[in-house]
Amino acid sequence: MEIVRFSSVEAKSAQYWILLGTLVLAALVGYLAAHHMDVEGHHITGMSNQIVWGVPHVVAVFLIVAASGALNVASISSVFGKVDYKPLARLSGLLAISLLIGGLIILVLDLGRPDRLIVAMTIYNFKSIFAWNIFLYIGFIVVTAIYLWMMMERKMNRFTRPAGFIAFVWRIILTTGTGSIFGFLVARQAYDAAIMAPLFIIMSFAFGLAVFILVLQASYAWTRRPLGDALLWKLKILLGIFVAAVFYFVLAYHLTNLYATEHHGVERFILLDGGVYTLLFWVVQMLVGCVVPLVLIFVKPFSQSRQMVSLAALLVIVGGLAQLYVIIIGGQAYPLVLFPGMEESSSFFDGVVAQYTPSIFEILLGVGGVCLAMAIVTVGVAVLEFLPESLSDKALKLESATP
Picture 1 (cartoon, rainbow, N blue to C red):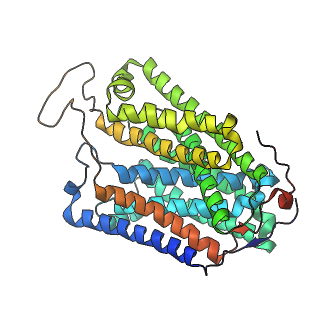
Picture 2: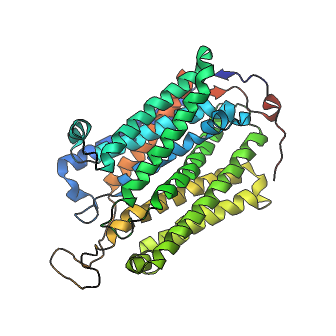
Picture 3: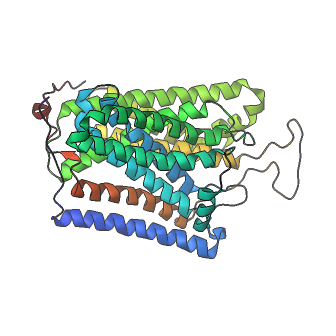
């Protein structure tokens, strides 16, 4: 591989400023929606005492999980020595930081009282996984920023591998912590499972790589820079492997739950009787988010088309959002089992499936967080040299092998 030349994007075209302005405007609308919810109260949302985590949490968790996975491309090059991925490492780090910031902003604004974050940052209960996550999230940004510095500063290049190893271990721990939020909640029948941690890790690989592929293709299309087939096919096959792994872990999760009698109720709810949650699980999560992308990636003639690669990545993202919707909101909608084996009823909705319909304000907050993340990427590639000038097969000396 020849020496890859990096350069920043020229922020002079009208298209660039239209894109950036649109993203910033959408982020501002998201903030105003959050402010309106703070002023009026959460009664204007679809959330309730039963559903306390809504669509903003779904999008926020998706961005946080995808942030970890987006750094996977850089880890492959520096930690596992796959030099073919080295030209993509800088963009990988930038995207990871941007996605995490977007997700954290949504969480902060969805608190109802964002100023209460000061309490969470100054008073710690280390028996709570939420307290640990404050250190994990902030630490991830710092570690990834240092990792980028090692890559971009020629004098510090010799420290890239150890910095990349630390970032790799940190993001595995971070995603484990995010999955453990649900795995440790024993009160919820849909959450109480040790497999949640590895499930979230493999989800991060798939979701993060899907976002990375779309950002990479969009960046090179809009800047008219060459993007060869060989590297894109490598990313495509890697995405297919990760999607297949997610499919396997989802099956393992539900099969192990079906083995335990205490989980039969919630499994029936998700798989058969859950209404919108059952529809999302079978149609959007499993079919649209797993089966169809695998067909597009591995079956000819779909696997030979760049457009199909983009479509597969987009469907993985759609399926990922549906998966988190089912896990987070579906898990809350199923009634708490207060006295196993007994029937109970009261005026507090005991034994009743909670209803939830997201409001426009929740949706705008989620979209605003996504647009903020993309705005950071848009500014980043214009300010610093994150993108190689060419990723053509000739420049990288890679042989294109279209499956």
